[in-house]
Length: 287
Image (cartoon, rainbow, N blue to C red):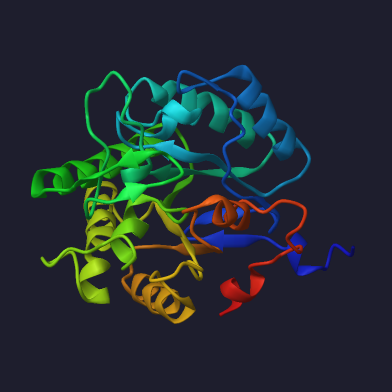
C-alpha cells in the first residue's frame, strides 16, 4: 500500500489532527475491574497506538450513570474517580502519536436492575427488554433531566481526563435510540409520536453538552443505519435522523453500524460473527 493512499493521509476534525485515517472503533474488551481501567486495558490500547493507528476510539459503552452498563464489564464513567484513569490511558495513547475518543452511553432499558444503587431501569416507555431480562419503567420528567445531566458530567470528565473527544452512543439499543425508535417509544408527549419529537431527547443531550464544554471539543455520535427491526427505524428513517443531527451544528462526526439487538438473531447481526460478510454495513454508512 502506497504512502500516497488516502488512508495514510492526515485528517483534521475540528482542530484534532489525526496522523492517518486508520481507526479502531469503539468496543469493550472487558479489561476493567469493577468499572475501573486496568493496566491490561492501558496496554491493549497502547499497543494499537504503537502499531500506527491514528485514532483509537476506546471505552465502548462507557457508562454515564451510576446504574449503568459498567456492571457488565465496561468503564464506569459516572464518577470523578475515573478522571486520573482517563489521563493514564490517554497518555499511553498520545505517547505514540495517536489520538483517542471514548464512547459514552446510557443503556436505558438495557441497564442492570440488580445493583446496589436501588435505581430502576427506565426507558421512554414501559417495555420489556428480552436480552437483558429487564422490565423498564417509563421515564418521567425528572428521569429525563437526570439522564441528560449524566451525559454532560460524563463528557466533562472525558475532557478533563485528556481524552481528545467523545462518541455518544445512539446505537445497539442505547437510551437515545430508544427514544428514536417507534418500536420502543410509545409516548404521546413532546418526546414521542412524530420523528421530530422522538429526536428531541438526543438533541437536548447534545445541546446541554455543548453549553457546558463549548464548541471546540470533538463530539460525535454512533448510530444504526437501519434497525432491521419490525416496527423500528428503517434506512430512510435513519438517514433523516442523520441529516438532522449533522445539520444541527452540535456534532463533528457520525459513525454508522447496523441492526438493533432485541433477540438472539439481531444480537448476531449487530455484533457480527464470521458468518457476516466483511464491511457488511458499509452500504448503510454510504447512504
